Amino acid sequence: MTLTRPTTGAPDASGPARRPGTGRAIAVLVLVALAVLIPLSGPSAALHGTGEAAAPGVGAVALLRAVLFAALCVPLGELFVDRLARSVPGAPPDPSPSWSPYAAAAGLVAALGLASVVATGNLVPHSLAQIDVGGLYQSRDGKLALLEINAFLVALLCARSRPAVQVWPLGALVVAEALRAHPPTEHSPLVGSGLTVVHLTCAALWAGGLLCVLRTLHRWDAGAPGAALLGLYARVAAVLLAAITATGLWSSLRRMPPGTIMEQLTDTAYGRTLLAKVLLVVVVVALAVWARLRLRRAPDPLTACVPARAEVVALGLVVAVSGLLTALPLPIRW
Image (cartoon, rainbow, N blue to C red; front, side, top):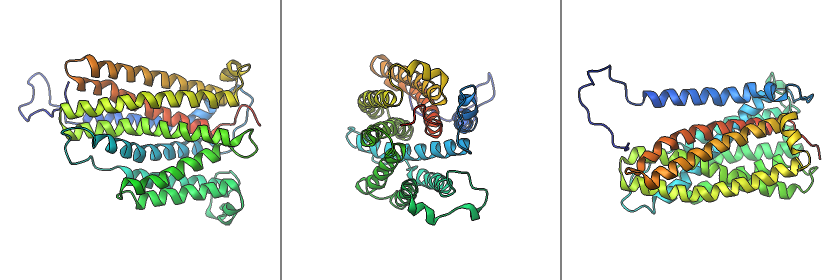
């Protein structure tokens, strides 16, 4: 398999010609449906039989946070891959059309929705009268929600600017999410926030970077530069995976001590969702190894794009599960 587009010709007499891109469009629709279904229906499945109570509107919050994470992955991935592409010999000069403005707009909508929940006392508002905008300035969570809104707004305005300008609002978003996930009442909150900064940054570069690599290869329609770009990404992705694994394991052990982790993985909503995320990551790693083997050993290195596309789908599901994980009650209250 190569990324060279087929020449126009008569359809195969053995069957009707398929419209180009139909299979890809169907796959995207299925992925979007699953990404919406997981946050909305996941809480009831995760909480079943645990005796835990989730906050009202947990499904909506999980969906909004999944959108926020996805909106962070896209621009960070584009900045990462654009930098890699500049070091590829013979790379076409035209970059792929940026999705950053659309991602920033979606992230801004998600941040506004999450801020409205915070402004209503962590309840899903049913009318504008219930939203206390001024109250956002009175609480730590409210200030962080406002920071995320402003960061996405700046990211939207700077989406066509130089990378050095774009990285600042995206960095602010990562820091805001890390601080939100570890309130001062937690034991060693700065340690937890630091772990989350590394984990979230590496995960966004991994998922968003692979998506941008595949889009770039499709646009380049070239063999050797495309294989070189995919190889560069694969080498960096191995380092990102190591950092994600280390920080994820450390963060999990901080919330579920080794003596209770096996029980909590099956008896708490947070543990069950974390276990589902781990299993999905195992699938992602298996697909990444498959792609790397094809890249190194196959006669046509670009056949690695087949497992890489499946890896992107699995990473999209990981993002959706991550949104659900952040909305569920923690197994241990510090």
